[in-house]
Amino acid sequence: MDSSPQTHLKALHQLHLQLHELKQQLERGPKLVKARQNAVLQKQTELDAQREKQKQLRMAADKKSLNLKTNEAKIVELGVKLNQAASNREFDIFRSQIQADKMANSVLEDEILDALEQVDASQTAIKTLEQELATCKSEESRVANEVAQKQAGLKSSIASLEGKIAVEEKILPGDVLIVYRRLVGAHGAGALAEVNNKVCSSCYVQLPPQTLVVLKSGQLLFCKTCGRLLYPGDDD
Ligand SMILES: [Zn+2]
Image (cartoon, rainbow, N blue to C red):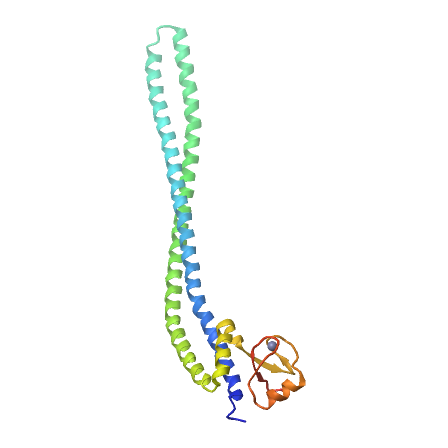
């Protein structure tokens, strides 16, 4: 009984399950790195947008400052004209123009202060985004290094498991091996199924009594319902 190929199936199944787990971990690695790369790209996009906004805000503030200077020069000019006024009527006109321009400048000064505050706030936002970007980048390289290190270990564990599986597989007779290989290709570790409480653990269909008898005699059997290579569990 102990030399029967069937007694190797549980171990073979365990090896396949471990292989499946390691292969999943191997696939997960690049996805983790990709997610970090995307986070960096997204943060960079946010930063670029904020820098562009900063440029616009600064241009708007500069434009208002220029308007203020132009108006101030105009007021000086009007002051000269006021002093040279030939009549009271002219004097009143220049005076009211000066008043209107001073009023406009006072509004403009408030707007400039507001614009400069916006520039400052935007500058602070840029600094925050720059720090966040730096954090994203260091996270990316940390994860990339971690994954690269782990991948090497995983690949060698996978190679070692595949070696062990190849050894276990040698016990299978040729005709069974052909079907088994097809099953592994299609279902991976699911090529094998333990029978627990007379039920196939892959399709959950109960096995007929005569099938159970054959199975317990140590013969290699495929489930009639799902086709998996069966082996008896500990409680059968
Ligand atoms: Zn089945």
